[in-house]
Amino acid sequence: DTYQFYLFENFWCPSIHFQAVNSFKKEFQAKDSDIVVASFPKSGTIWLKALTFAIVNRQRFSSLEDHPLLSSNPHELVPFFEFIFGADDIHGQILHLSNMAEPRIFGTHTPFPSLPESIKESNCKIVYICRNPFDNFVSAWNYFNKIKPTIVSELTLEEAFELYCNGVMEYGPWWSHMLGYWEESIAKPDKVLFLKYDDLKEDINFHVKSVAKFLGCPFTEEEENNGVVESIIKLCSFEKMKDLAVNKSGMYGRGGIEKKNFFRKGENGDWVNYFSPSMTEKLSKIVEEKLSGSGLSFKMCS
Ligand code: A3P
Image (cartoon, rainbow, N blue to C red; front, side):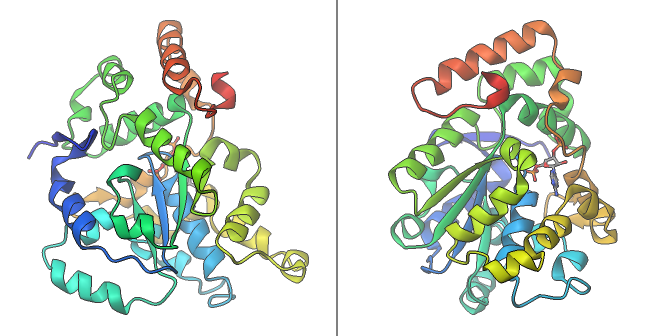
């Protein structure tokens, strides 16, 4: 049961998601009220899913004692298109989609150019998150080493690094993934909000407010004065989420991933504990080369 990639529409599509990515593209009908949480893998997807869910549903679930995020993993509350369309009962899933409460919130790792036309053409919104490639690589390497069987788990850090530098990782190359959403966020700032994990860690308060504003539900002054922003930040914090029983044990998805593997360290800068000087030099050069002229940069890479 090896984990392979197909080079499909210029990205590395995991073989286990191949059929789903195609069905998603062909069959998904977006609604204007839909919200898509898009990300490059291991960039804080679960964090942004939790934040988006909490922000959008803050009036429905105003009590923090029985909030759904305390009893469900964010991947369950905000399902990936790649899992919905990969389900055995795909028609049942599609039927279920039309009955979901609005606004519907979904996750995806699919690169922007390969999204269904209906997502691109409707007025639905996309919040995108990526992360500086140094921490992204370290997060991915740790993660893929824990969820076997994967192709990466059979590799040493150095071997995995070579692949990452060549853009080989699920849904990679990372630079194309980032730049696809980046360019769309510049062309259509009302359509795509481009976020970086690094920035969220630095100033989460600012970003929670900007996500709310972007999604058309800005916080009122009263909410701000009543600590609603702070309570969402706390509810979705790494410490809080990692400690919940629902995230500590049990499995997620068809691939059988232990939910605890979604929470590792949750910090910027852990890459220094893994990178040799030559790795640092090599990846710095690639970042510069791939992102130059795009306007996209990462503070720690400059
Ligand atoms: P690290 O491996 O650096 O710790 P994804 O959700 O895209 O798989 O990203 C996983 C990364 O986000 C992991 O990074 C994980 O620890 C971190 N993470 C998970 N939940 C988080 C949270 N609530 N706040 C901040 N980081 C979080």
